[in-house]
Image (tube, rainbow, N blue to C red; front, side, top):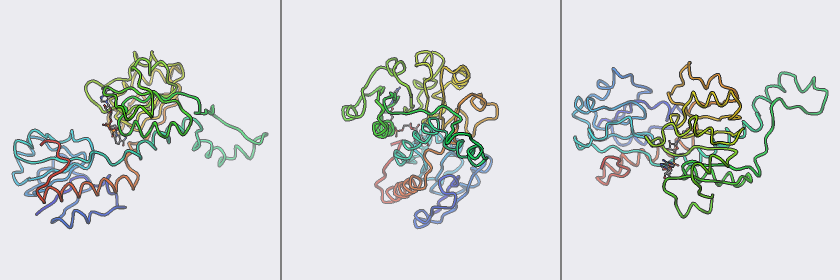
Length: 318
Ligand code: NAD
């Protein structure tokens, strides 16, 4: 049985092992697959594993040997799951592997905004402390979190984990979710979206990207926020209208933003957020600590094993 991994590099740039897949069949791993090589690389393989390489209706029509598609991510919008279903091909995903890693990244971004540790360390290495007339200096405002309010939009797994950490910092937590959940009430106070926007010093996005959430942060919602609010987005770039956020950062309405995701990835050179004031941008790394990728790998291998044992799990097109 042939197994083809079309774009394995981001999941395993060399610090993990593909042995779990290799034990299940004749494995070929490609770091990346350009669009014009997708069909030839799948060829007559029965098992196809993708992360972001698209598998369209045409792919399924052109590769009749395919029996199973495994997506190395939670989001599976790169696969035409209906076309797969019509061919009787199950598509699986990794429903959860990175909850703690993403929640941790929220605070990596937030603490960078509060203390600019990296910039201050660089300043010290440049000699600014050596030549300083005082015993200390700081080049940016320093912000204490205790006593402030964090508003979490989307109070699911990552939102609730973020709330747990927030509470340890002494933050008050407000939550907005379309589907409030009783178990989560212990971690934050559910409010309406408008209440959350009006009361939060920090707004953190954790809802999925749906048509209803696309652009949820825009000039109107920003106008409802406190002056000097901090925005954190580790969820999906299109939740934010980027031009509106850039304008709000430049005017100071939004004091700072910490973004792990942008609307088009990799980021385009003309993204207005690249030149906006006080905007920290990381290249979609929240999911990527080794521990988190190792969990993803284990679940992906177990998904394939379960399929081969005719007890499929995590099927998104059942
Ligand atoms: P989850 O499904 O556990 O939680 C999402 C929550 O959003 C749910 O409680 C749901 O009810 C709520 N929701 C749905 N529609 C909403 C709406 N219109 N308004 C407000 N809330 C709404 O998902 P999760 O595991 O917590 O992941 C959240 C998001 O994090 C994912 O959708 C993904 O986009 C993102 N993510 C990012 C990375 C990264 O590397 N940056 C990694 C993993 C996940």
